Length: 306
Ligand code: PSU
Ligand code: MN
View (cartoon, rainbow, N blue to C red):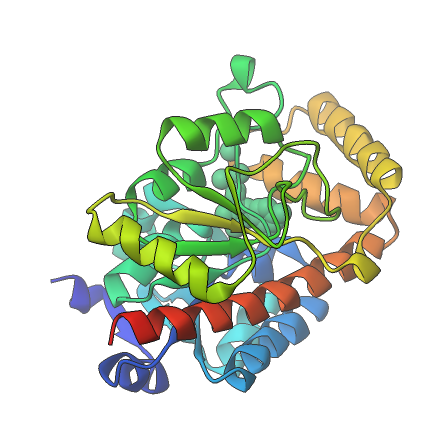
């Protein structure tokens, strides 16, 4: 039944059938996370990095109401350029498919689709989380619930401090989601290597990551795993600079009454403007670094699932 809604690109389909390693990629980062044309350049370069390591990339989006697992270059270009592509999380999926619309997938919906397609590793920039002030707004990303239930490993550079990182980690703990620091003892804060919050466990090799992930699923402990892979030192932003930018962005969001699914894209755009594009460059570099680790992890997991 689900197959009626989904189109898996030939290259990806073949790789899955042959048991080769595939890495899922989201599309909200393309249509809502970065400006054109950097978004398209980055998405294509990420795919190249993954191929270079010997894995197959599968960028995921919804086009004309069809779930696409693996996009053509022109489709990535379209998502990067088009205005008004809908940001699609779990709750949006049925509407966008039934109405035959275009949509960019978040971490939550990309996990759902990756899992349906049989892809175990997903690379992104940062996960959504518990927003600051969530005790009043209840603004908690659906990404966290998805991590609690769907069996996909997510390689990210942590979570931005537009979120309440402490509460995000507490939420993940409550729902039994392992949070692993890749070569770090601290959960990374996207633009910076440090957040002030530790991780449950530090792992230094992709092979060990793969072992932990497979063990979780062998035990039928359903749900994802968060792998926090810090931005490389040379691209890290200044802690003070970024926090000032985030404070200003949060203030403006509050003044303008930004709510719901608009909050995250609004904050991301403001931070980019305040840091005069420095944050964009950092964002690109950390995604490349995640792609490298994700591809290696997919290959190691592939060996275990042979
Ligand atoms: N955080 C980032 N960059 C992003 C996003 C989050 O640093 O591009 C995107 C991801 O697609 C994530 C989504 O899944 O925003 C979360 O949105 P919300 O908080 O509305 O659930
Ligand atoms: Mn939200």
